[in-house]
Length: 317
Image 1: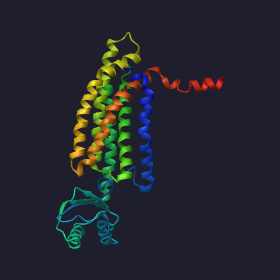
Image 2: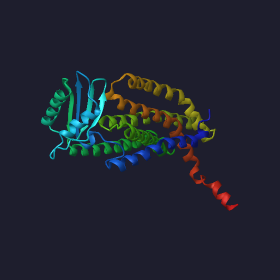
Image 3: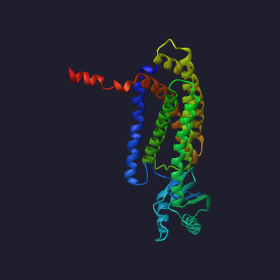
Image 4: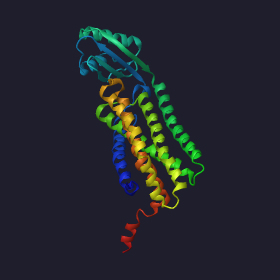
């Protein structure tokens, strides 16, 4: 099985997945002016109210109209995002409100819709706290990437060009981050999903899984670089990938099947988190096999110096 031979095909497939995500991140940024995808209250501040109705659940439009009635000059809570939960519950995200306003809204729901309303959850985050969380999230991703680079560089210090292992791992990790945030941007555009603290948790988990699988492949490349010295570098890297292929696919497939079951049978409150994890782990498996190790071959052969060679020769002729 010659995986390395078609490395540019795999690079192109990655671009086909990443570029639409970047486009939708730009679209979301232009439309909302707040970020590349809709942000939850954990990042932008606001209130989350989850309620359960004993009788018939009101329509989304009716809840939206009710919230607009409670919007005042001092407390602008209109334009809520209403999401059905199960068959009898709703989650409403809006601008920040006080406990008094929340109580009045719940009381009005019971009066207007003739049904007992149970408050399942009420969370309120100020915009300043949301901004702090956003900055902290960015630093968390940056330090995670820096720590991974330094650790891999140290772990492979006995190998020639040890820095290449760390750099290739970071590139594969960035590939997975771009895939995840791109999918989040697309889902946010079409389904209105908002990035919250669980999304950040999923993103950091994906980074860990991506690097874990990449190190498995890199470690085999390191071993074979000392054992298989008589064969050319490209063949040695390809042989290393093939040797770890079964282990990588089996390990990640076990996790993905579990997550897929959670998507089908889990609750609505965790479905967003699980889908992001599922996308990220699939991307991590792909990048570890088809992107990370092939980067070694491109680097070793300095192939970027010949990418446009044919064009230059044609122009000369």
